[in-house]
Image (cartoon, rainbow, N blue to C red; front, top):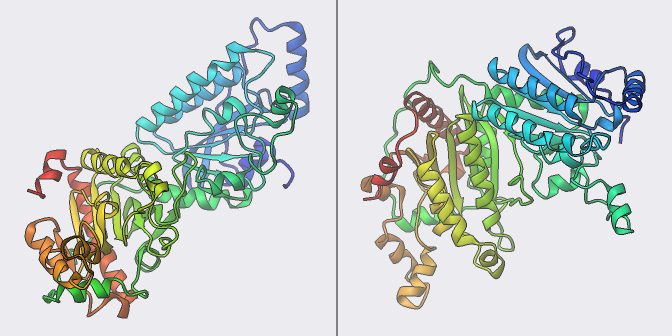
Length: 491
């Protein structure tokens, strides 16, 4: 753990030199006892600031941003009424002025010297942050060492993107309080930034000197223009031959077929990976990220063929992670891009206990009713409910050798014929190919493989990327479709 940076030292590290403008006015100390006033004066003398938070604005890589920074040197960064007033005033100003908001809390929580009147200020702070997010403005959080108590349980946990300092103590109940209450130490390694990342609660662990980079990349996507994205040509459609269905299935299963990682590597302009549900779960079978294809921004939800294994197939956690991405798209007013590429959702006691069927249903419901434009890319295999959960969209694009079926063809054969030998015949009969789904109106356009994505991964991904950029730019101009329109393609 490196030495703790003061609020102003962190501001100097992250913002452009000389750009800081403080927003704070002197705190109101009306009604404060003499003893508490003396304590506040001593805290100010030691820390060099007059309260536990410092608020203002500046430029970060030339972009105007609003900033809330905790100061641990002032009474352990605790939040009393004056600090809460300062935070709420700053958040509301950022909202009025349409500024992205960067928060860097460091705090032991509520100020015990003020008791419950300070404790309930977390309601006001949370409401102000919620209103900022409801205005479609980014709220990005950097958790520092330590961030606990009511601060972690309010403005520390509401970020669209949340990252933390390496080795930071981050959690709800401070370990000293736990030991005093229960007579034993809190288990080591639980309330750490690294453990929160492992459990899908935060998006990354980032050193202070890298914060400006990650924030700038995120804001480049989040603040990208929604309208008037020019110069996105119609990519056109290459001829798509009528390849036999079983050949399509076989090609989609090639281990060297490009998946979402190579798609982003070869076709995306900017990528900021996110992590987990934010609520204690993560699944390597789903990639969630903020992405731009060309100039067109989106929230990206991609089933990752590399993260899905026999031992760890796509589980309900992945679908809860996907639903986090849907909420992000709604809050930020960004298009949502889903990518289907899965051998199928987990069939296991753990998946049943985790509510897999319910998560499929909730994904379908959330996607059909989402108040943001939606685009689906069928990239490879599309087995069962795990694939269907990411299908409903305003527009559906498919790779030539992508397909969708209620079960793997071998499973369908086992049900109907009591063997797997009839799998090719079942696949043909079930109309699983992209070309069949295009004829049925489920798929809007097909991207050709020349002759197979695995044989031309970079060119194929770039071709897909050009189509995605065009489709996203069009959706940004037209806006989201209605739930009825989204469902009507399946009649």
